[in-house]
Amino acid sequence: QVPLVESGGGLVQAGGSLRLSCPNSERTFSMVAMGWFRQSPGKEREFVAAINWSGRSTGYADSVKGRFSISRDSTKNTVYLQMNSLKPEDTAVYYCAASTLYSDNYSSREYEYAYWGQGTQVTVSS
Image (cartoon, rainbow, N blue to C red; front, side, top):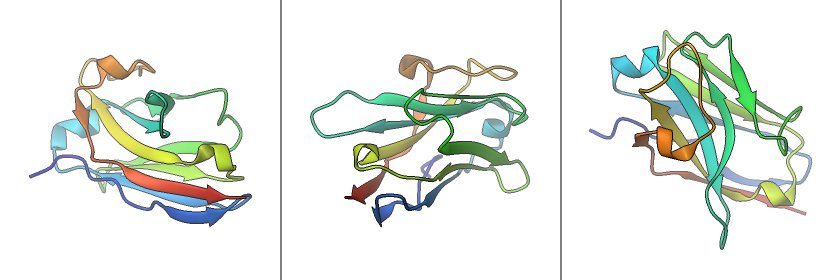
């Protein structure tokens, strides 16, 4: 069983919104930091947002601050990424990831996330 499965991607016009979801099947993931990353064609995967186990501590890439919001619902074992005011440059495959190295804190470093979903495509048209 795949532990992380993203959903909620799609095609949206610039200025629109999408909410990505990442339910997980591993109960242990409810006690660790979770993150969202993205990869555009021809570019390396980059950090988008992260959240600690309780949801009280979050971090964002400068490019999405003020537009994106990460949250988690422990009752549903699900992490969300609310994306508002989307821009064409937000077009990418978005990945959910879990880091067992962090609990009270979080990381923006890709290599510190051991568990990854398969990604969901987000396309923003101009």
